[in-house]
Length: 99
Image (cartoon, rainbow, N blue to C red; front, side, top):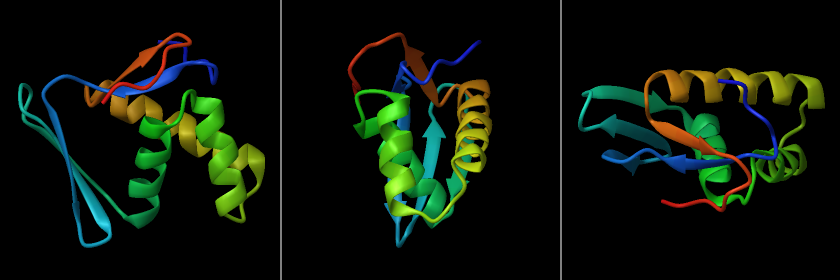
């Protein structure tokens, strides 16, 4: 799937998300896929699922972290690909987030 930064991320159906201390755990109840996120990954997850678009999350994260814009973009694309591949998120064209 080709991801546009104008798209919106939503949590896939039947996925549980829980914070444990400063880390996050995601579990897809249908596929039994489990993913643990470190504190930075948990913050990125939160930004992606709360923002009206991937680009809005990207802009928020640029303001919070000292990172080269190209590096952040590449890291976001990689994480989005992993989350999609594990069916933990869905991407909707221009839609509002829906948890």
